[in-house]
Image (cartoon, rainbow, N blue to C red; front, top):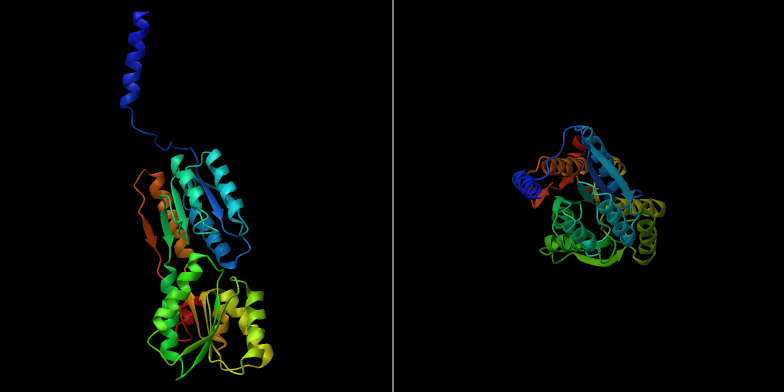
Length: 306
């Protein structure tokens, strides 16, 4: 019996001095990727860019889930990733506040979290993305320089209540504040949707005999607005959107849109992959990894269409 106890104690000492878990050679490092919505053009392009980035490391395997814009569904998907004991979770949150319980559950389970493109209101995570207030600021600065005296503008908001919608609007209004002669005559949410952007703009065309500019919190709404303006024969409206999607770049080249703010899907995806690699190597992940927004206008659009 004494011999058995001594052997057990010796074994426990050996175990106590062993290093912590090390990623084993030949074993897959599994990442759970919880996407906001595969139907959203920008989030899907970022997801595809992440898939491409991950090809650089055959040891990384990714399991994808699509919340389709449903915050509750996304929390369930995170629960599933936790149950599967993935090594890291990348989340493109449906909702800034609503994602907090999922982030906190992952924290409790000891699974590192990367919030991609959209931050979480709580919990511990690495944010990889761009500051939305900067996108709005760039739109406001462009309009402040471009608009004629006493210009009237209309603004298409993103989804109400989402922090990125709020930040883009705040950034825009602050940057435009110096132009006291410019008035925002209408400001309505079109929920980042092209069809809704078109419908609201159709109403504005009927309501307002003239407005000089239309600013949208993303390119999809801006492109919907452009359709409505073209159908009504309304010319000379300065249009600005956010994301730098292909259709918007084509519209800038054609002279139909004046500006889009480039949100770098590939850069954000690459940044998220770099953080995944740090976690895989056991290195401490940074609090944030920022990818700057860039203003695209007719003078530099060719740089983004190559």
